[in-house]
Length: 147
Image 1 (cartoon, rainbow, N blue to C red):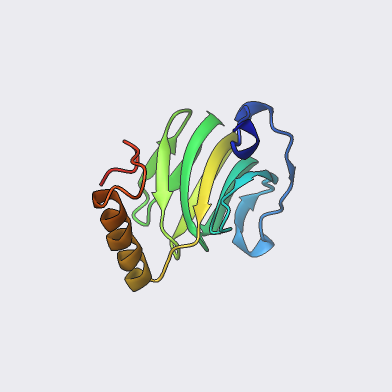
Image 2 (image 1 turned 135 degrees about the vertical axis):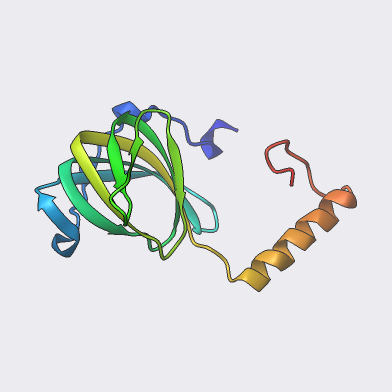
């Protein structure tokens, strides 16, 4: 059982360099690092630990991304100049195609769950199929998967 479950402590994961595109950097010299710590069997999802030092940059999300901040802080900058602080325990979700401007004053470390979104009709068919299997008693249920 344990060999198919990914476990670890995000604060202790050793990360590899993952430079932010120079075109995305607006100020400072942010240094980003990351490590893929788990991947789904179908390769459509992965869990990544990511950190970054001080700087301001635009980020284009090429996949759906859910984040949970582990340490440090960053500010999501709105188009009207408003800011939203993300600190330890805060979460966010950024759909594929979203672009966001971030400011990191010192550092931030987060866990990110990246997922390739399905074409909407395929996603609908999969949801219907899953409900059918559950109602027919052919699939195990999880309280987290309930809809």
